[in-house]
Length: 280
Image (cartoon, rainbow, N blue to C red; front, side, top):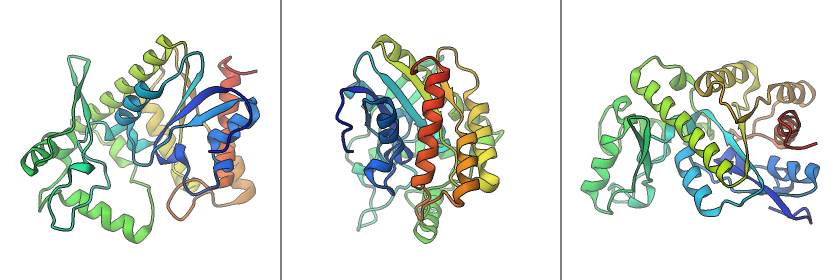
């Protein structure tokens, strides 16, 4: 990410929708926010990261006296309970790959407990993935499970990062538990930011498919997250709807936001920073 030629004043965190891989570095929403503020917002977005991985990364690289912006998409709310990324793949010999596992958190009496990555042997990896919370949604066919296989095929053919938002709306208790876990991680993220004198901002990032998806996507996230005292929550729908009305499709081939979409997210973030008294 190019520098704006000014001191660092904050950081942006999240998955690929924060990283913004389909646009030039100077067109990503963290960089555009940097330009508007006149100081550097470092982009720590990593493709495929859920809230759990993002929180752990923040603990390693956080600063004090700065703005912390978490870009949240729907999948990040439920990915924290999984032992592997949603786009799990197999090695050439069809065995589990330790490099594609990740740590995860569980809630024990409302207390977050970190479950480390499994050992690098097949049995440990199988046990980790079959015992995590999303496993209840999977039908085993062969390792790693039918959902992963179907997802991989769909993504290969459709070239999209998007997932059906119905998972967040599911009334199933396991989905509700995943939502509770995700919200607990957001709250923990905000508390740890406050301890470091950072001002925490939650940017809700919906599907780029504005027609039919924007309202549903944001509504589900807002219902899951709810009102969180001390957290500046930004709903970018006004800016995204305006950008769509002026430019049309905001979605790239891989399912991320275009340059116009990133500009709308940046404008929404700046509006939110001002509304929360973080920026003038």
